[in-house]
Image 1 (tube, helix red, strand yellow):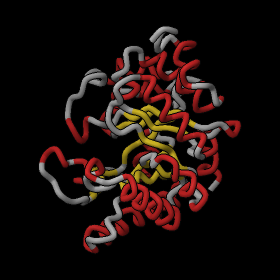
Image 2 (image 1 turned 135 degrees about the vertical axis):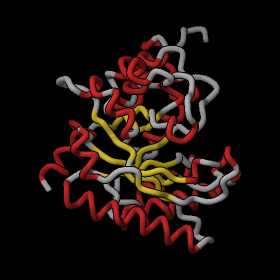
Image 3 (image 1 turned 180 degrees about the vertical axis):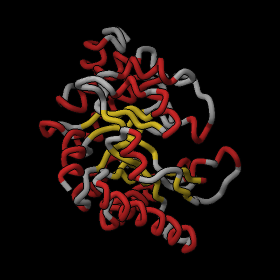
Image 4 (image 1 turned 90 degrees about the vertical axis):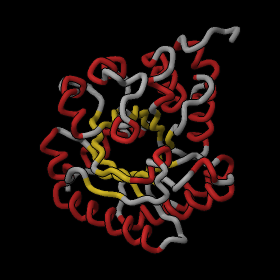
Length: 274
């Protein structure tokens, strides 16, 4: 398992937290502003620790990972109807789109797979557990670290307490199933309880585009103070006014514990008077 640990430790090099750009949205929503031309967009993300993308996009964005010091390539291994709320989907039914072995052969450093736990629909829960467990078994054979993406059905309809209970329970279940890292929602003040109860590093996702870059940086600061090992931001990076500057500000906040307002000004994300 040497390869597994080498790849996993690279994400948290020198014990630092990670800044990851998510760019796999096209597989769930089609073309989206900020990554219409993904091979061009990734040129602005060189200072990210990793970039999340799909198998088709990895093929066209190989230049982003082919030089010394390049970001790590995280490859989405599955597709789930949990992201189809805009299409009227009501469940969370995952399907594999590639294997850990194939991901390694394409040049991926890590894989990511979605996991939903309803705690009410036994068919959905059984399906998600079986799906994720099969990927865990496969990644153990080839040494590809696997990130479990814990994502609820209709997250926007959940109360703060419902979201906390989902994340708190689901993170521990994913850890028990064998996830190496977990990506999920930041749940506010009680997030630290989840970090304490989960032996697996947790990354916080950005979800919808926040009103301003400052809002995203504030959330990143709160999450890391509560114990998150990093952030996985998509729209809050590639739809920002200056993605390169936004990544610089995120690195200062997430890795070095900088004040988010000061980091925003230093990186040029916003001016002193904004």
